Image (cartoon, rainbow, N blue to C red; front, side, top):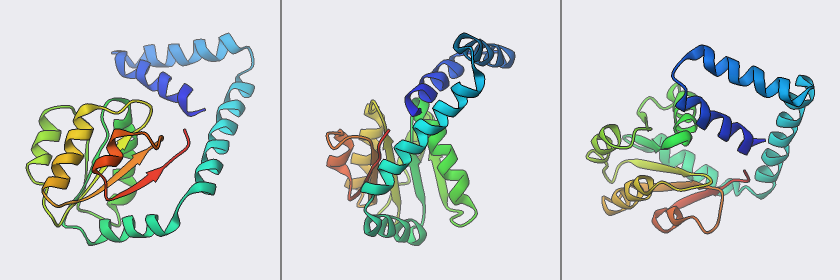
Length: 173
């Protein structure tokens, strides 16, 4: 499922050689004995989590978020550490319809440069799954202080990101 994928992604980021990534994935499949079963289990786990998210999703909130992003001067997606992959993926998906979208995935330089531009005509999306990075919380708090529309994508009602968000999406992970 998602947690296994997340752990694999954390390990991949730490590896420096491309071929060592493939070697690690091959070893994982070999250790399970049945590559097809490993893939099926991972996909089924993800489908179940997506189904749970779909069942609890508030579509009126999704519409508000979409309208805010479409009407914004700029939309910034803050996703740090392994969540940076999710932020970049969201950026790529939205870029064709919303060219003014930017993913902040680096802890210092890129994030702080983007934060300097936050304004009331912007949307700032913070993503915190599993563990929430302090810099993501700080970015959403700063955006809120600058009167930007803030959106939290979280996997817990206890996420500290919710305190600084105008709108939120709770996902099952």
